[in-house]
Length: 44
Image (cartoon, rainbow, N blue to C red; front, side):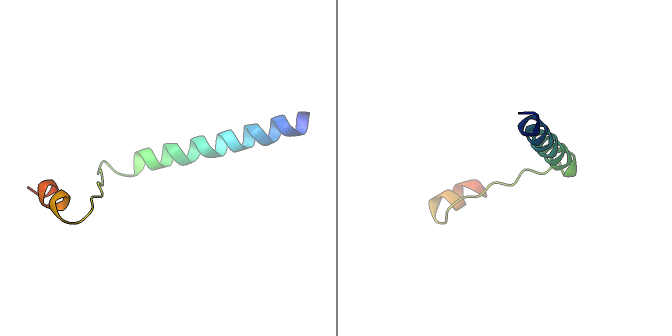
């Protein structure tokens, strides 16, 4: 039981640190669109 708790805690801390570093990395937002009319609308 204690082993599962420690494993969950380590996983949660790892995920939190990944999200924290990703949030601080850039202020740029990337948007993906399919070709054709969607791409034309996006770039206007």
